[in-house]
Length: 432
Ligand code: SPQ
Image 1 (tube, rainbow, N blue to C red):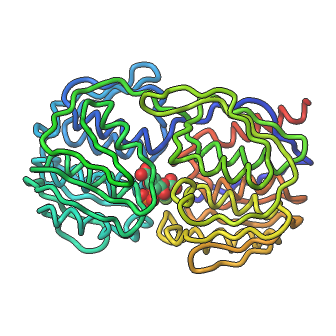
Image 2: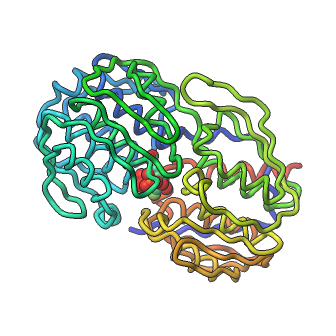
Image 3: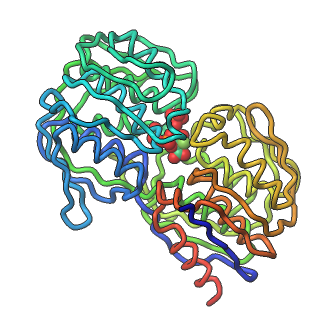
C-alpha cells in the first residue's frame, strides 16, 4: 500500500531547536568497518533508517554479531577473514551506499555471496565500481546492474583515477585495497565526502592523503573501536532551507555534522543571503560537528557549479525549492550525477516544482530556476525517493493550498522522524 500524506499549514513559521538523526553515510561505514575489524565496536548516534538497517542485516548474514544496548549499536566481529558464507542473498534494498561499498568489501573477503537490491537500486550503475575492482583481480559475475555475485579473492593494489567524483566508488576501492596485496591509490578530480578515510584511521589504519589522492597499504588488520555518529547535515538541510525561506523563522541544529566535504549547503545558504551562524564546533578528531543556527533573510539567485557539487549533491532537490523563493536566476550545473540517484533527480525535481507553479528548466547536468514565485498546492510524487518526498513536504510550508505527497514511506530511509520534527518546528513557530 502506497502511503499518501496531505501536508497543509496556515502561514507557518519554523522555529526552535532540532537534533536530526545520525548521518546515513557515517552510520553505514561504522557498521562496515566494525564488521571488517576484529573485536567489539560500539556505535553511538546510529541512524535507524531503512538503508542502514539493510547494512546491518547483511553483516548478520555474514556471521557478525550486531545488537543494541539501549540506543547504542554493538558490533562483535571475528574480522573479515573469518566471516561465514551466507546461505541467503545479501539484500541492499534501496541503498546505493550499501551495494557499492559492499562490492569492494566482499571482493577482498573469503566468502562467495550474491548482492541484490530493490527495483530502483537494480537500475543504478555498478560498473563504476566493478571495473576498478576487476582490475584489482576481483571476481564479480553479472552485468552493469544488481544482482551481482562476488567471490572473495586475493586482490592486488591499483592506482586509479576516478572518472566521476564519487565517495561510493572511492570507498569501495579503498575497502578492497585494505585487504589487497600492495598499495592502492585513488585519485579524485573533485573531492567527495571523506568519511571512509576518517573512519579507517579511527579503526587504526594508516591512510595517506595528498592533493586529491588517497592511498592505503594492503594487509592492515583493524581493531574494533567506539564511533559517535553526528547528525546528518543532508537531513538538516530540509529545515535549514525552510528557516531560510520563511520570514520570521530561526532554527538551531544541535550536534549536526560539519565535515567540510559535506557543508556545501551552508556555503550556498550564505551566498543566497540567508543568515547562518556556526555557534559551536567540536570533534576535530574523527568527524567535526557542532551547533548551527539558520534564520530567514531575503534570498537571491546564484550559480552553483564545479567543485562544490560533490559537497552538496544530495541537497540539490531542496536547494532547487529554495531557489524558487530567491530573487533572480539560480543555475545548477555539473550535477549530472543526479540522474543516477534513487530516481533521476533532475527530472523529478523539475516535474514536481513545475506542478507547484515554479519556473524551472531541466538541463543535461542541472537546472535553471527563476524566482521568486508564489507556489500553489498540488498533488506531488516522491518517486520512492526520500529526498524528493521531503522536498515535497517542505514545499507545503510555502503554498496556500495543501500539498499531497504520494508515497511518503520512503522518507524513513534517511529521516524516520521527519514529520514529527516538521510538526514540532511549525508548532514552535505558532507559539512565538
Ligand atoms: O546510498 P544512496 O542511495 O546512494 O544515497 C544517496 C542519498 O541521497 O542518500 C544518493 F542517492 O547518497 C549518496 C551520495 O549521493 C551517499 C554517499 C556515500 O555515503 O558515500 C555518496 C554519494 O553518492 P556518490 O555516488 O556521489 O558516491
